[in-house]
Image 1 (cartoon, helix red, strand yellow):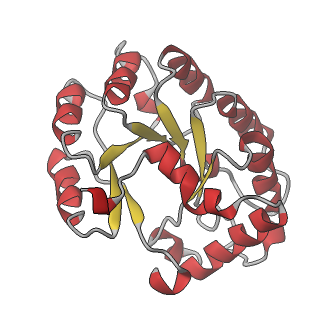
Image 2 (cartoon, rainbow, N blue to C red):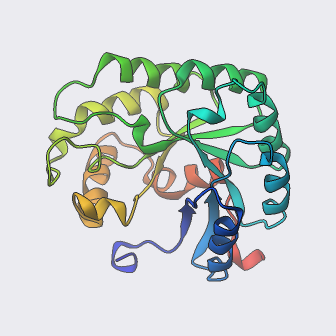
Length: 237
C-alpha cells in the first residue's frame, strides 16, 4: 500500500494507555521504516514516571491525548505539558478544548502540539459548523500548534466517503487560512481510512487541494511533520 504511493517511512500513532503497549510499538520500530512513535500515556499519577521511561528511546516522539490532558481538574495539566517539553516531545491532541489548549500552551510555550484529524469536524459537503471554525481559529493562534490533515473520509457523514475534492473543500479552506503551509501535516490514518474509503483516495484529495494552493508539497508530506515530531533520520541511529 505504501510503496506504490511513494511513502518511504512513517510516524506510528498511537498505542493504548498500557505502558507495555507503548513498549510493544517501540519494539516494532526496530524496522527502520518506522521513523518515530507517538504513544499514549494516561493523564494520571504515573504520567511523569511513564514518560521518563519511554523517552529514553529516541524513537519515542510524543503521545496522543484527549481533552483530559489539558483539563486541569487535578491541577496537573501544566506539569504534564512541562514533562513532555522537558524531553522535547509533543502531544497529538484530540477533542474540542480550544481555550484549555490555548491556556496550557501559553504557560508552556516550548511544547509542540499536533491537532488530530483536522480538529475533528463534521464533514457533509457544506460550510463547517461555526463552533468548529472558532476552535480552529483559537488554537491556530498558538504558533507551536500544527494541524494533522487526516481523518477527512472518516469524518464524512456519507458512507462510503465521496471521492471529490469539492465535498471536503470548505473544511480544507479553513485549515489553510488558519495554519498556512508551514503548520499543516499529512496523516494517512491508515488502516482506519479503509473503513470509509482507501489510502489512494485520501492522498488524491489532499494533493489536489494543496497543489492548487501552490503549497510546497514537500512541507506538507514530510518537512512539517519533521518539525512537529522531530522524528529521527534512521541512518543516524
